[in-house]
Each structure stands twice: as C-alpha cells, then as structure tokens.
Image: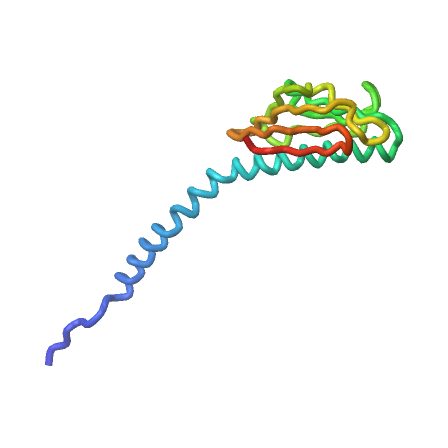
Length: 148
C-alpha cells in the first residue's frame, strides 16, 4: 500500500504563518508613526493650556501679577513675577514648535493678582504640522484652544 500526503508539512505551515503575520503587522508599524506627531502636537497644546492656567493660579495665590512670555528663539517660555523674578522656565515640549502673535502678543500675556487677564485676545501655536488657536477671555479668565 502506498501512502499519499494529505496535509502540509510543518515547514510549509511556518512559512505561510510568518508571511501572514508580516503582512498583518506592517500597517500597525507604519500608521502609529504618522499619528505620533499629531499626538505629540495635541499633548504640547494641552501642556501650554495647563501652564497658562498655572500662571493664573499662581497670580491668585501670590496676590501678584504674573507675566507669561514665549521665546521662539530660545525655544522656551517663562512664567515670571517680573523681569528678574522668574517663577518657572520651561523648554518647548516639541522641537518644531513656535508661537505666532495674533491679537494678543506672545510676550504680553499678563494675569492680574485677581487671576483675571489684563487683556483678552488670541495667538497661534504651530506644533509640527498642526496649528492651534489659543484664546484668553476677559471676565472669568477662561483659556481655550481649538485645532485649526
């Protein structure tokens, strides 16, 4: 009696599985890399909003005016009481990040001792390929941003 093979060998099955797993994993490796810059830009925008709210809270807690200044040449922003009295200096969260003055300049953001901003207006944050419009409102001192 002669036996005929009814199935595939172990080597053939392993080759097919390795080819299929490579084809399945390829999009998972490529897609997050493209989204990571968007996620990093969103994180940077959230960080800037949080630090503006921090400046507002520090002004209310200390009873002193607080100034926020974004420096595109040094790639850092300062939260300070005065020119020489710096509360915190932070580097930009991303390398490809810059602030574009709008109605509100990027060196003229000031919170009064009550926590209210001295002026309302907006400015643009360009982080990577994304653009965000930050707006500071008078009154309650609300700070918001939207992705453009």
